[in-house]
Image (cartoon, helix red, strand yellow):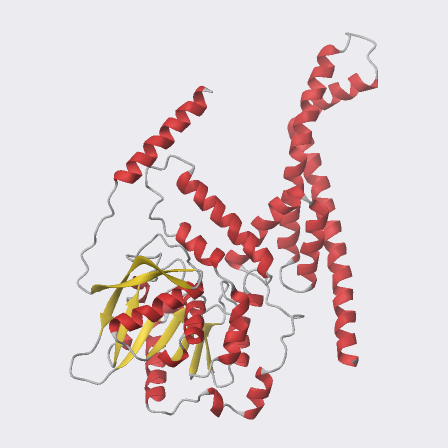
Length: 452
């Protein structure tokens, strides 16, 4: 009771401290601001939102192409600190902080890709930009695609740099599972921000609530159909070793946009930072070709590629999640196995059969969840054994008392080791069995589709 009151007092003090804190205003001579209307569920409201941005250009008096650079999540306009000056040698470059990030308004009713696209359309209106070349990095790719969809006449070309896109290549590939993951992430970050006395330390964290809301509010299922409608010249630049957005995503985007150009580079998700010079030269040359009318639009695509773009997606071979995505998926399997071990093992085995996760990731997540599920029973048995042993007579006790004394003698670590072994065996058996059955079913299904 006393501890609870003390915690509540600290939490109240934290709220007071956070309320009295004023954000530090950084003096940035390159930063400007646009004032637009807030977006809520696809409609404009009367509330106002500030979009901070930088503008770079080689000089006045020239008829310049305009390039808009869209950062990822978490991210901010400073992420383009190396790329923007390279592009600004021959173009006007606008680098906004998307609402919810950087110096722009942080609290929004809607953080989705679609909302950000509607903010950008207002942003272009505010600056008097009729058409622009749009580059989306990482999450910014989803925003760029939505901008192409809501304002196709405003986009001269599209560049997807290490950009996400189709739902099937994101995390588990399933919208509902991914939505659950993003929801759990959002709940954790909300609790850390509002449920602990953090005195404002976490309010400006990069991996904060706006980042989590951005993915939770967005629906990537629509991006496949948008990609099928992209009509402008398109450049796709991706790292072959990208573990956040797999190279298979870029290849699928290349297939869906038949006029697109795909450039695969050695590197991971950080091409923007590690290969800024090369990417800048590449993107600058692409923008120049578009401006000169030498880049292909969808209507100019080769017939073979246009036909390939219309083919249905084949989900049999999906990229295996790696890096952060694999760690996130393991974290999802743990609580799921804790709640429903057998069902989760079956689902994990299915992902293994489809090549989405490794057997190690699937077994590890299921094993840890099953182990945690068994810990309460160990503690209860330990408590019951101690009580039975204390109540047993000094001599002549029967099997229950003997079991209790044996349990005490074994100790909690011995029981934990036994539970670990049994959980590991169960996880290995159930996941492997589910993977085997799923693989056979997938093979039979694919054979049926081929013969038909």
